[in-house]
Image (cartoon, rainbow, N blue to C red; front, side):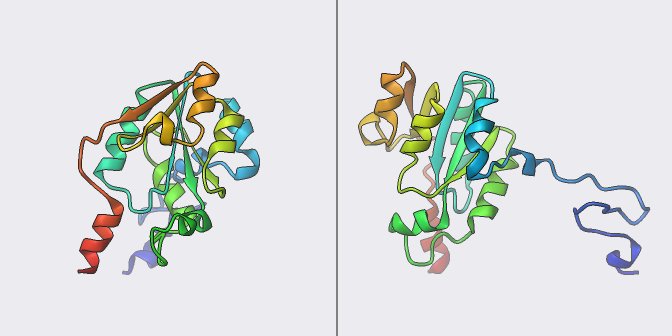
Length: 181
């Protein structure tokens, strides 16, 4: 008998396995904030608050290592994710992002290291950073406080900027180029 006939195999409300046992709904959606309520959700997180941002188009080992390390710098980690339009303005290619914003946010929210995922549509997350006042602003090792939007404001407010060195030489752009060849 096909799985669909034996029970509802989806993860939606009322899903059951072939024996009729309820399948729990995923927990990650609770870690995704809409832009409209992002600041209120961030304000409820424990401090020290760590903030990072990026495209996170195709999640790889470099990303998850970086996010685990960032989370270790505070009590909560907020990840701001570029909107699809914002990614296109970054010049990563006409066909980027490969994964839409909702999918990128869901994958990030499913990670244990991430406490909240929020979208942003500006070219940089500076306004969001200034508004939420993180204690620690984190970027990858190819950034510095001088090249990171919002770093000057975080430092002026008594916070820290941390550039996490690359533990693994990975790049979504390089991966996409390798797949296309």
